[in-house]
Image (cartoon, rainbow, N blue to C red; front, side, top):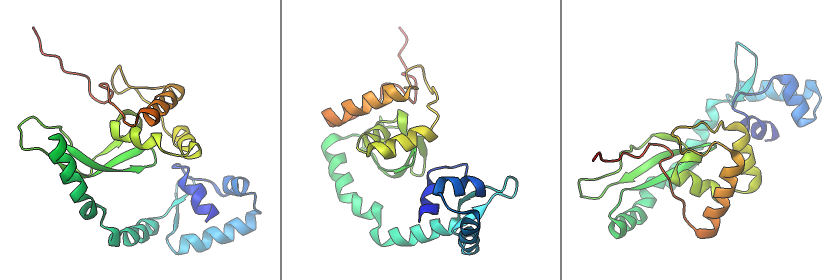
Amino acid sequence: MSILNALAARQEGFSLAELCGALDLHRSIVHRLMTVLESHGLVSRNPENGHYRLGLKLFELGSKAIAPLDLRERSRPYLTRLLRETQETVHLCVLDFGDVVNVEKMEPERSVRMASRVGRRYAAYCTTVGKAMMAELPESELDAILRQTQLKPITPRTVTSAEVLKAELKLIRARGYAVNNSEVEAARLAAG
C-alpha cells in the first residue's frame, strides 16, 4: 500500500531508485514488490524512462468497488431538489486530485443555461466546485495537490499563487460557499 500511495501522489511516476528512497526500503525488496504488482497490472512501467506508475487494474477494481454505490443515481433526488429551489444549472462533480470531473448535470427549463457537459474535466483551483471541495481537504492533501498542480492563468483573474489560493480556501471554509470571478472564462460584457 505504501508503494501504491506513493505512486498515487506523483503523476510522472518514480524510478526504482526514487521509490527506494521515498519508502526507505532496500532495492531488492522494492524490485521484488514491483515485479509482483506489475504482474497483476496494479502498476505499469514506462518503457521509455523505466518509471513506475499506477496500473489500469486499479481503475478496473475501483470501478467495481463504486458500482454498487451508483453515485449518479443516488444523487439525483438531491440534484433535482437543488435545481427546483434555485432554477440554476446544477452539477455533481468528483475531485480527482487537482481536477474536478463533472459526472452529472441537470438544467432548468429556461433558455439561459450554463455551458458544461458530463465527463468534462476542469482544473479545480479555478472553478467554484473545485475550490469548494479543496477548501474542505485536510492540509496535507491540499499541499500534495498544490505541489503537483501548475496554477496557470486561464484568464487575467485566475489565481496563480498557492498562497493566495490557500487564503481564498480559508475564506470559503469560513463563509460556507465558493465563487468564480471569471477565472475560467473571461466575462462577456455587452457593448454599448
